[in-house]
Length: 179
Image (cartoon, rainbow, N blue to C red; front, side, top):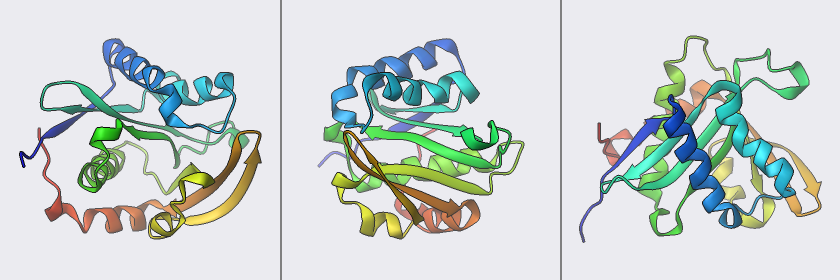
């Protein structure tokens, strides 16, 4: 079997931000977000609009196959608590959903976040309950709440960034990065 290579690109220019939004909108139905479209759109766009912290994953043919988005700060603190990073989306096209690529994406994310000017202390993310990822996610974070929405329940997770980074990076020899 041919091993594919991937690379990640931070969406620091308008053209990459456009690719990010187009990719997520093209795959909107596959995202299975538990919110109405208007809320989902603001959620997906927030990574680009608030801090420009969106990342694309490309395959070796320069096709977008995944996207990661996060913001710094929380709504309850008017986004002033920038030591908290909230992961808004991690999505890969179904044919690219592999443990290795997921691990590489998390490693890229923690390496990137660790280089930010302000240190990130805590990570937060939400996962639809119906995905049944609780056992896997328990290794990465602590479930702090479950929220009921019209489209289903979502679990909220919090993690100490340094602990998360240490856990993810202990697998660094199993992932190969393409520059």
